[in-house]
Length: 373
View 1: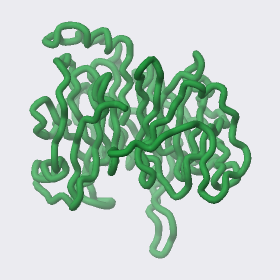
View 2 (view 1 turned 90 degrees about the horizontal axis):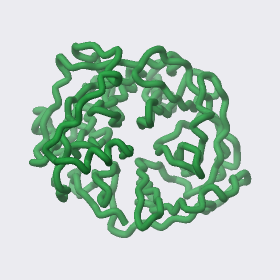
View 3 (view 1 turned 30 degrees about the vertical axis):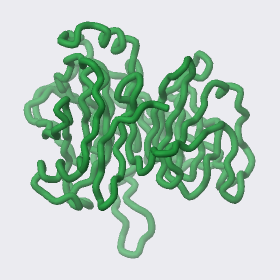
């Protein structure tokens, strides 16, 4: 999952590598000590002071955990962990076919890597969080007797597994499809129980009360219609002009922008579709980075590789409002990166490198750093 490198983090990283960032107690308002009752761990994101946000889709909730992981990283090192899923399975006392790495996030201060893992498959699976540190050896993160706070979504879809012979899945498992922390808010995409089921939320942090989300409507060029029930699959916060927006990718594959100021409790908002990137495809993960004075977007996909998207003229793009037929593409310019094959997860490792979780053949997954193109 993408991690936002704020000005504060970048300033801190310029200090001594042995320094420890002193915690701001205000970020921990409302935290309690104990063991968060997680039913799942599907998405991860880092906030300030080493706070790790864990999305629990089965419970339609997000838990913020004080990891204490605030030691500033030293010089950057290349990362390569071959067969990381094999190592994680051994750590959890099971076989590789009985685990699923759901997400990945890099702590922008320490550069330690965190993995959200499901042990087992289906409704009986149990969650685990794994950390990969400087020695590249996976270790289990204990969630017992930690400081944490919790936000339950009030308008989540019902927990209703499909009946035998019924099409579709359990809508509860898409209550949260992606998360990111921005300034003092946790941004959440997913589904709700509203008629316009696709939903965005901007929940103030530290958590207090959680209101209903904003219902989302977009024009899907490949389908030739407006849609309100398809969830955002992955997103990043991004400034368009001088205003913060979300860039969000949907299955099959529209790229849509939303002004963050419009994400208000109970609002109905309409996104601006700025690209159609091809049908029969599912976006997997997305990051933003800067190189040569320009900002770029990297978008990993299930069947179209990793796209490098140029964003320097994004504010001038016209909205797509007509059908885009026969798998054609339209809108924002991009290139598909040669060599970035089999990528399932993306995050920023540091200013010059991405971290990827990629398929290596034979069911093996590698954790690797790659130079940002």
